[in-house]
Length: 201
Image 1: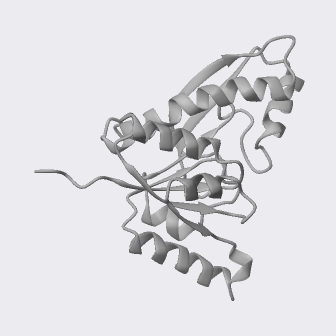
Image 2: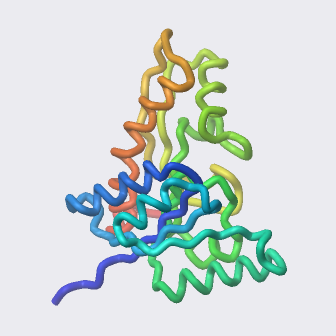
């Protein structure tokens, strides 16, 4: 008897390279779940085009376009339920998820952060800001962290980390590229382990 495939929503805000890593991982069987919905915080995100190319349904979620934040949050949660979403993966999503969604998907929402949390996390710590901070501090290593999502930026339980050396010749851009390469390897594998119940809480 075939078990129904786990249904995944990926939330993005930009180029969608993390989304692409999930799509590619699903194609080769590293990720057993199916990406059925892509939510973006902006209609300018190139990741929307990546989703459309794969015939994945997309949605642009902008809270301020609703009559109230409560209405926005309710609509997002309703849409997740309508699509029978099992897990949510944040891939470069720059907004805080509504508390109602976090509660409904307790221990089923993951995020990846381009640093070794708890260092260089929190509001405003994203993208090049993180890598600039690492270099300014003179750290000898950086990396990526996959963690569960709660109501606070970069605060949830850490599932796994991968370390990346920081070289004397690094610029924020060079370091970012090296970290991103590792992000794309670790993130689909961690999500798969979460889906398979490999983490004990």
